[in-house]
Image 1: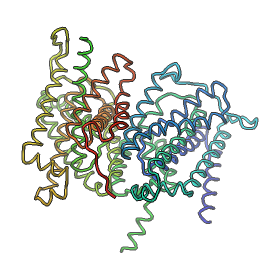
Image 2 (image 1 turned 135 degrees about the horizontal axis):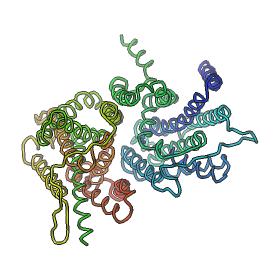
Image 3 (image 1 turned 30 degrees about the vertical axis):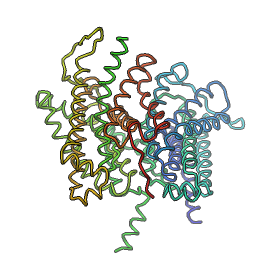
Length: 309
Length: 292
């Protein structure tokens, strides 16, 4: 109960935060929510189902391009959103099936390659995607006749959907499906002998994670109102994966912390420029060596040390 | 016809370089269960160290190469093993994969931030010009690359199969416990694998950089193709890496010429997906058993 209250207070404080910030701060808060959708989805794949996915940015990009093209053509945002999610779910099934049928670390290679390929399509198919010039002038949605053009309304709209998506994932992980995900992460062969169809469940977890990135992409397109290939390069996938790991993979709120590290921290550390990423890379190595469970595992570690002393 | 032959020859030369990187990758996997996502960046680091020796110390190419071999074996071989792999290997595959991903990011950004984001030309080992034989003309660089890479692969095979040390390394790869019982110094054999991997990365850098130019992100594409080559050929077979590399190199060239150069980079993924659908253990690989 105490935790629930703390959570509500934290969300309310975050919702009120952009009131005190300038336009750019509001934009960053919205971007934070957008990336959060993608990293929560990835946490389901990586943290709960135990599958390495290195292609989250490709799904993010597919969602963004679908949104850019459809929204410009005048399709309603509320049709585009589920369509993009479904499209990413379907593509996730197609990419994941061959890899997961064999060995689970093959998914890492398949998704990495898929991200490279998706980036090439975005950059080369100028007729559809606008190539390196991208697509600009993407309209923002209206809700019950209210325009969401302003920074604040769009932030609240994005935040609401993010909370909805996170609540759905929370429910999913507490359903028998979610339990099966964790079972096959911890011991796939035992899970299989207990009647869990490994391939079907890992595939499902991966595809749901991909669909979350698709939703995130739609919001990204509407937020920035301009899409080009650069944000969907596979280095963005790596950053998302690192966000999940840094926070602590398999911990429900791990991605929140991780997303702060990849979205907000670079803004504060702008003066460091490229050195920031270099330090980040080596920090990941150090984190893995000293704290394989991520930042959120620190309290447990301290407790363990106390009890063994 | 001549055109097709030319494409195949130059594709084989490119593939031989992928094979070198893939070979190091498979050796590491076999001996220590390490999937090294920084493999491509090792090639990049070796290229920049070589450039540095040539530019600042004024060393000729061969000397720079030898010095870089030593630096790479110390840092990317022994250093990598003791600082990163040894503390992480007992946690399983995933933490090590994440750590090598972090290492890959770190190495790239250190070169970008600390040196330059530009692409630098790199001297070729072979003379410029073409060799024409029965209407088919191939560049000296392609022929030289093919010969040198082929020689190294054959030499390595001979080392692994014919010498006592090489056979001990294979024994460690096949069954670590049994090898230890037989009195093989497992730790030392694994260290040798890491040293060989670093040396192979340096050779790959020497051969690939004249065509790719030395750039902080040049390792991305090489690393990706090395993984795919290793899996296509069979992760647990040294020969497989060679076959996979050459297949990717040739197909890339054919697709680049006959279909579209814009999608050359996607060939390796397609081939990978087809191979794991049809023959999951790789073209030359043996199926591995799973343990609970």
